[in-house]
Image (cartoon, rainbow, N blue to C red; front, top):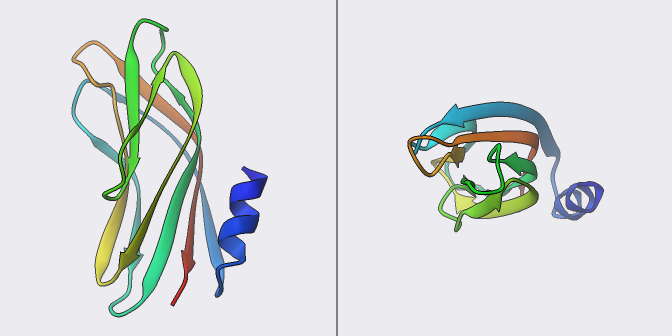
Length: 115
């Protein structure tokens, strides 16, 4: 996580860091954090942490904005990022992937203006 913070911090402007711990049950996507990007500005939003599906035989999913989702069977480190020009709301989301799986995320969402 420290590498992610240094990378995002070098992109210019200030960097926002939001600790996030949340869980979701079932296959629906749950928004666990949202970053609002102002009109005309370009921001990078990065989610970095540990995703846990509760069991190694079940898979949980994690995504940031329109980026491809990361997945974990059991517990795994995940990182996903999205670069967005506003106005836009970037959603950080988790899903259990099925009706019987819980997805838990414990990490940080970083957001920084790049232009």
